[in-house]
Length: 317
Ligand code: NAD
Picture 1 (cartoon, rainbow, N blue to C red):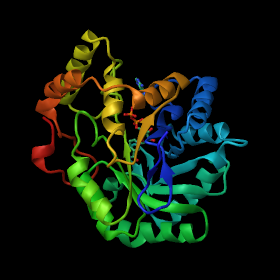
Picture 2: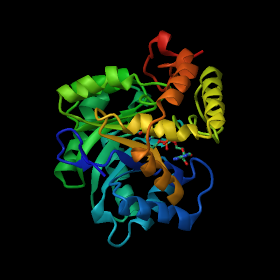
Picture 3: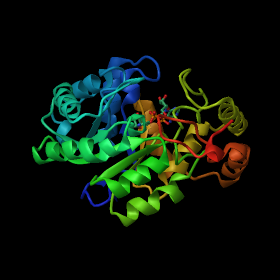
C-alpha cells in the first residue's frame, strides 16, 4: 500500500479509506461478526483512515466501530467522526452541541481523542457566517483541549466547500459524490483551492452511494431518475463484459494521485478485499471509455442539498 499526504496535517493515508456508514445499517442489515471482521481485515491490509458519524444509523455506526476497535486496533488507525447532523432533517452546529456530541462520540468509540473532527453537512446550516465565526472556533478550542487533532467540514455543494477552504481555519474538507465515473467536478472545482491552501482533501463515495454498482442504489438515494437510469445502463453494459461496475468505479476514484484518499463504505471483508484488489487490477480502458460515454449525458450533474444554491445548469433533471 502506498501512502499519501493528507494536506499539511502530517497524516499519511492509504488511497482507500474505510467509510463506516454501512456499519450503521445505512445500506441494509449488517452481520455483526462480518462487520467486525471487515474492520480488522481492512487494518491488517493497510487501510488506515476510518470515518463515521453519530448520524449514521442514529449512532449505531459509531457504537459498532467502537466495539471493533477495542484492544490493539484503535492505535493503528486515523479515526474520523463528525457532529452537527443529528438526523435526516435535524441539525445543530452550535458550539455547545459540537462539544457535547464529540464527548458522546468518544464514549461510543471508546477512545479519548478523534484524529479528525468534522462539521457534518454544513450546507444545512441556516447561516454560513455562524459556521465560520462560531462552529469552527468552537472546534479549534476542542482541538486545543486535545479532544481532536485536526478539524474540517463536509458537505455536497463544492461551492460551499471552496468557500470554507478560504474562510475557515480548518485542516481539511470532506467531499462526496464529486469524484466518480458520474461526476468528477471535484478535480477542477476544489482540488486547486485545497492544494493552494495546503488543506487535506478526503474524497468519499466512489460508488456514488451505491449507484455505480451491480446491486444498485438504496431506496433513499437522492439522485433523480436521469442519473439513476444512466447508472443502471452503465451497470448492464459492464455485466455484458462480466465486470461489476463497482470495480471500475473504485479504480477511477482511487488511482488519481491528486486525490489523497477515497472513503468507500464497506461492511464485509469480501468488499474490503475486492476494493483493495481494484488498486492493482489493470484498468480495462476500452470498457472504461464505453461506460464514460454512457454516463456522458449526466456527467457532472448533481442534486440540491441543504440551503446552498446550486448552479441551475448543474442540477440533473
Ligand atoms: P459508497 O459510494 O462508498 O457506496 C457504499 C455502498 O457500496 C455500500 O452499499 C457498500 O456495501 C457498497 N460497496 C462497497 N464496496 C463494494 C464493492 N466492491 N462492490 C459492490 N458494492 C460495494 O458510499 P458511502 O458509503 O455513502 O460513502 C463512503 C463513506 O464516506 C461513508 O461511509 C462515510 O463514511 C463517508 N461519507 C461522508 C459524507 C459526509 O460527510 N457528508 C457523505 C457521504 C459519505
